[in-house]
View (cartoon, rainbow, N blue to C red):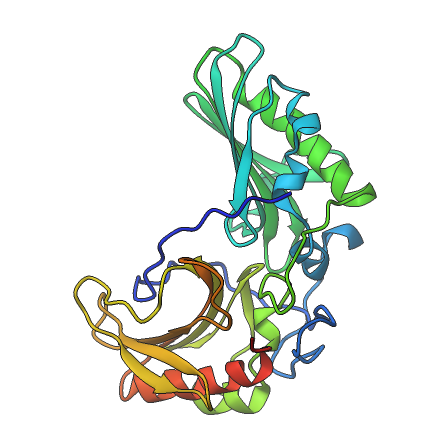
Length: 316
């Protein structure tokens, strides 16, 4: 079972560059109020295996993939902790009793050239990178846009981290194909929602441009862009969105009976973000963040996009 761990997220932090791509229109869980497809979403080549489809991966418990049985393949198991939006982290011990750190992300962006994936594990191409006492294996689960399962191992006790990573990736890929552990999701969770399906073509045409298509960045992030314009939708765990960020106060805005909080981008001259909790459950809860970057009244555009997204999400 996944144990939630929150991370403080600043809605105004600059968006990192990601590989352009186009997402395939996908269905989302029937437990949400989201439409099954979105006309603003472009078609792509899809997953490398049906088991790796984004809607399936969103329903998987990442810590269930790194349960104690799987950890026992490489050492003495530890406690797994994480959340659907940041993956799973484990501190365990290797065969010699030395501490070893693991982390697993599902649906992470992969920007490397696919021909560099010279390793194959469980029938899946893998990009492997060794860095000192650490190793990162990226199993390519989707070609266009490039997405993958990313497992990181840090083993400072002399254990070969890449050997550990290969064993774990092989086991995880097998679980995903045969018996993926299901997330015990509460009703109305954002974890199973496809963010690319939340913004319709008319809205994209109006706010970004007629040639913009959805570009999934992770399982819970999507953007639309044209030169000089960026619209970004993401879900994450974070603290109260009404709180100031780096001493910059937020401004409440009405999304049709739902209060969100607007914040001009701190790191850029142009841009604005709008954030809210669809359902507050703890000090850190699932958060929707809409960001719009462009010259002009970017906050008005961000609010316009937020109203569209809020209208398609269930409310508590």
